[in-house]
Image (tube, rainbow, N blue to C red; front, top):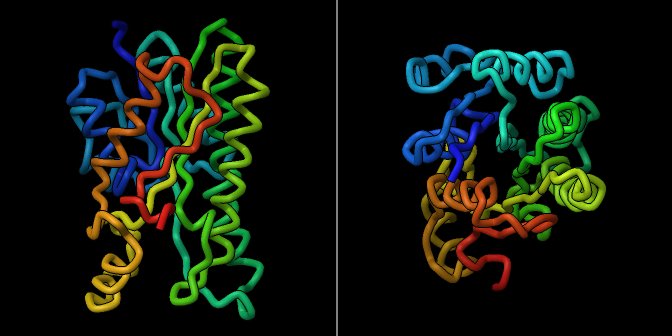
Length: 245
């Protein structure tokens, strides 16, 4: 089995960080990308190639792919785009700036990273695998934590995943997504109120507990690897059964 060369965005924390940790443990060569250079270096200096990248800026994304390719002498073979932000705001008062910020990082970032990967692979005749990160929020509303901009961005990520899988499949590019539920990461706001968190887990999550970033990372690792070679256009829930409840 060939050793994957993996580029991970949002690698300084949360799910991205968990993906990098797992990939390194599995023997992959990893480029850890994030716009927070200080946190990135603190997490991965000496273990992974640290690439400062702003996924909302095409030039920054292209420079990140170029840096990894130059360092390794070959392009990444897979990409996990875990960069994202979560914001809460009642929709009636949701301002355009907040909407644009979430869309730029969560949706446009997913597009730009995917485009850079596909261009790199098409130029070299390589096949490759892209994993995008959606959310359970794409499929259900939330009265307590209204986040129309976040939910809309993640719904669009799933639509983007399906389109790219169909469009790029003939090029040998697989595109899939994971849709986490309530995961114990720095983005989790439900945990700010322990009583509300406990009530949600009891009523809304059949497994009755928070998920861990490492559990999402395991699914991402499966999707970038050879064992998922006939999986494309899929959105896999990692939510403790919440989507079925």
